[in-house]
Image (tube, rainbow, N blue to C red; front, side, top):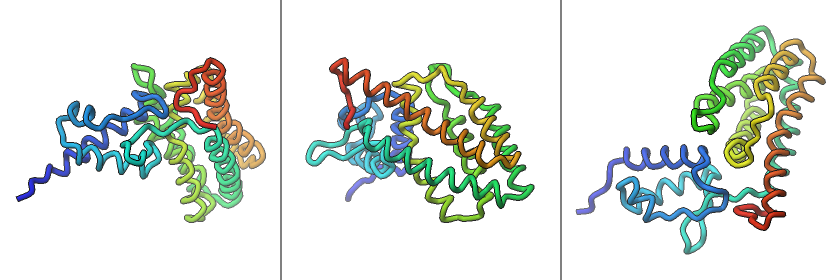
Amino acid sequence: MTVTEPKTHSEGVYASLRAELLGGAFEPGSKLRLAGIGSRYGVSLSVVREAMTRLAGEGLVQALPQRGFCVAPLSVEDLLDLTRARVLIETAVLRESIGQGGLDWESAVIAAHHTLQRTPYTTSEGHLGGDWSVAHHAFHKALLTGAKSPRLESIATELRDCSLLYQHWSIDIAHDLDRDVAAEHRTIAELAVARDADGAVKALTDHLERTTAALLAYAKSNTESGRGIGISA
């Protein structure tokens, strides 16, 4: 008879590894040793592989043919393409939201911004906060709901999810801590509810491109120094 491990083991390993990946525990492109991870969590290799497969589906890790898994690399080409796609889609939907959203939309944006503003940005260890990430996602989602287009919102959400690892890396490896993120979000929210479409679009564009600029600077610095760890063109 085959003995299967409880589903909670798989869920727990997946959640813990995901938190570690987003918390900057592994460098971009680094090899993930399944045996070591299994030993650390006290689970079988099959449980670790199941968790890795789920993480690969989210773009957080990559499967290596015949060689296991590695952390997704910091791809400059992908980062630039993703940022361009996000700017094109999110600003277009935001403009629609500002033009069509009613009082309920304004209230949702203000409430989501209030929650985001009251949630700590980083943890005591200096990593991007998990609660903050949830509030951040909710805020950006609220901005787009006024467009009343589930399809466009879905596309924007999918692109935002793809940028999650890059977002965490901007803090954990690029150390982009000089920016005033709270002020950036406050400006976007205020311009949006004031129905200043041009101003809000510019503020959102600047906000999205700031994270990209920090990671590009990090990639350039590491390439010039000869390290180039986990960085692809």
